[in-house]
Amino acid sequence: MVVFVQERQLWTNPVNMIDQVSTRQYRAGFYLRSRFVALFAIGALCAFFFGCSSAADSKQQKAQAAAPRAVSVAVAQVQRQDVPVYLSGLGAVTAFNTANIKSRVDGQIMKVNVREGQNVREGELLIEIDSRPFQVQLEQMQAQLFRDQAQLRDAKLNLERYTSLIPSGSIAQQQVDTQKALVDQLDGTVRNDQAQIDNAKLQIVYCHITAPFNGRVGLRQVDAGNIAHASDANPMLILTQLQPIAVIFTLPEDVLPNVAQHMKLGTLEVDAFSRDDQTKLAAGKLLTIDNEIDPTTGTAKLKAVFDNRDNQLWPNQFVNADLLLETRKNSTVLPTAAILRGPQGTFVYAVNADKTVQDRAVTVSLTQGNTTVVTSGLNPGDVVVTDGQDKLQRGSRVEPRTGGPSAGPGSAPGNGGHHEAAGSSGSSGASAPGLSMSGS
Image 1: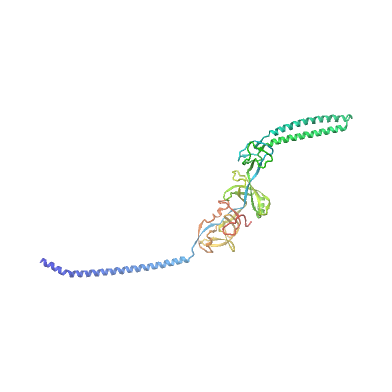
Image 2: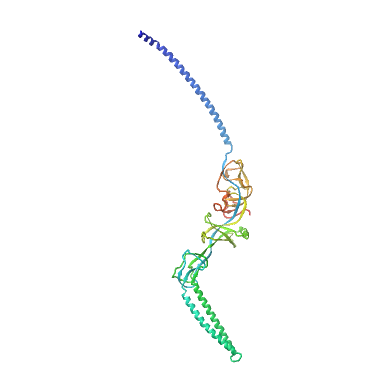
């Protein structure tokens, strides 16, 4: 029985297995179709949303492209401050006094009492020349004077005797006159002897060479033991006065009347700057203006005096001299880089509150290095463009940034780098070389 049951089960199992397989295949196909439909629906939904977002982004990009782009520019604020007006000229340092020390007598140099480069005082002994020959000559002249004085006294006594005999008629008038002439002759001889004595004493003084003024000794040309001659072409040493010291510089002839007018009001200050025009060396006072103008250059020489206590100035040194003519109070100033020039004249780009720019015509009164003074067109507190003007036009939107090619009005002469006196130039944001001023 057991065997039969097992065989029956084996007989019926293939049908059941076919039914089960068919059911499983149907269910698997249904699941696959349902999953495919779901994935398709999800993909279509994603594509829809992606298309919508792309269209929105495209519209936004087109809108941004259509809108004007902000230009990044450097700006500075217009300020009100005092502006010094300088006149600049090229000059050279000149010793206030220079002496070529030479011997006025012939003789041997006994001693040189100074060192090269030593600072000496007026009257200090520099060089000693052998004075013994002149001392001997002095003693000879003194002896001759003593002899001639004795002869003069004898002649005077005889004249008195002769004069007393005239009333009695014991002597001729001619003899008295002759004795009187002899007295006068001997008196002249005594005076000549005295002059020779004074001359010998003077030669002894010349043997002791002293400093004619306070100054600095240069490199000496002779040493002790050499023979000095009054006719020597080369000096024994050169003495220069460095304190005070002078600077001679030139200015155009057109500004001389203005300088002369301000000189009547008071002493004008002069600053000396180094060759590179960056380092201030000394401050002094204007002394005088030369009495003539150089016709070849159209300039005149001016002389300034400096105390030079720290010895920053040396003779023949090249310097840039700046004459402070006046100080303009409460001036409206802005960086020179902000000034532009067009067919209608000078103008600037002013930044409005909505970050747009507007071109404004301005009247330039003075350009002083990196600072320009205007008399109209701007007010203190206005903001102007100092860099990037080539990309702007009226109504352009900007993105301001501080700083730029110039440091602004705060970098006026005397505050930071050195200045350069100039008037309004023909190029944007630059000052003309040399010296010129617009306005009064």
